[in-house]
Length: 130
Image (cartoon, rainbow, N blue to C red; front, side, top):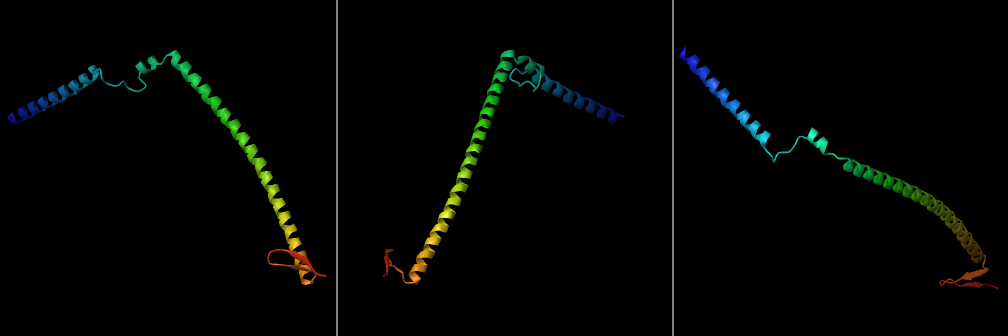
């Protein structure tokens, strides 16, 4: 019987110590002025003022204005890119036509040289044979 009484007393003492520790930690946290308030707490919600809301609204309007400016610039760049692409296509077509003209001239010169009508020197001068 004495052992059960001693066990009950030990359990009560341990429970009391744990309870006192819990209240001490809770009380210290409750009265700590350096603590941080809980996120989304009512005190934080009260601190939001109308001037803060108007500043946020102004910032949102400015950001939306910037986004629309960037979108306009992007459209301008795309139009410019399309113009440059079409110019590049035209230039490539002109280069191909010029290459064909050069090939035809080369073939004509080769044919005239083979028939002995002209003579082309190493430095590129052309002489007409008589």
